[in-house]
Amino acid sequence: MEDEQKLILNEYRRNPNQKINKVAKNLNIPLGNAIIGFNNLKLNYIDKFICLVNFDKIGFPIHVHLKFKANNVYKIKDIIRLNDFINSAYELENNNFYIECFFKNMNDYSDFCEYLIECDCSNIREHHIVEDISREQFVF
Image (tube, rainbow, N blue to C red):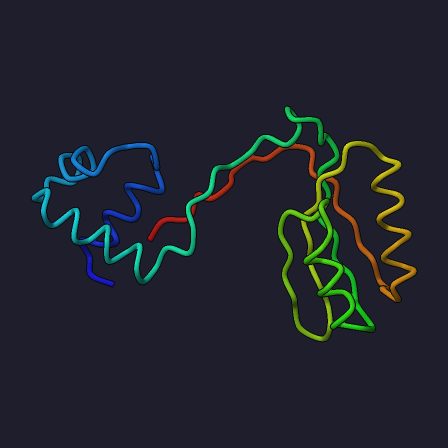
């Protein structure tokens, strides 16, 4: 990735709502270079454009990160892909998984944890998120 593209990407990560001409102006680069650089970023580096949601404000106040060991990796991957409570999921080493979940209430959360146990998951460690301090902040 070229240095100019890094600057463009970082500028968009700081403020994704700005127009390309504003990015070019902020970075003091020609508009044509900014357009070409951004199009190259979309083709080669940007997976998708998303918005960050405050789940608490839309009725999902229980925010939990879970780490667990899955004895049936294929089954748990299917469960993860189909479960509406899971926002993000990562497979770690040694059949371990790390998932971020949002729930409307503690009953839903408790039912989900019981379901994981029924699906032969073990060593379940839970971390209740009290406050988002920083998200999607990384720049290079």
